[in-house]
Amino acid sequence: MVQPWAISEEDIAMTNISLDLFGQSETLYTYASELMANGKTADDLAFKRNERQYFNNLLVEQPNGDFAFTMVKQFLFSTYAKALYVA
Image (cartoon, rainbow, N blue to C red; front, side):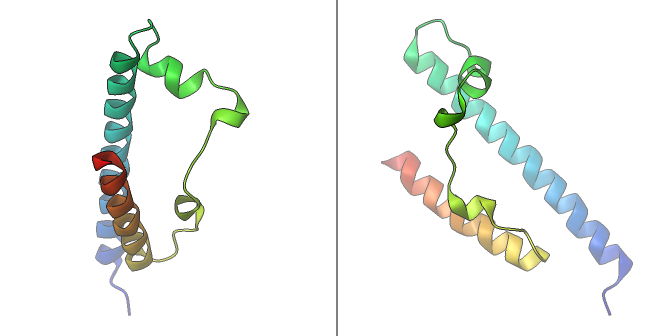
């Protein structure tokens, strides 16, 4: 039987992870706008695109399911992202 407090712990963990990912994306968009040096802001890069310019990895589109599956999915994506950033 799953304890009620365990579900609360998972909810708090997922909230903190999502806040961390939002922070990472904000940092990357800010860095990209500084590299471009064409007057576009991070918000311009993030939101002022047409639908054909939105891309994402299919792994992040998979349903979360239970907490363990979500953590494995996040680990795999983070490993991929690190290799991408290094390259």
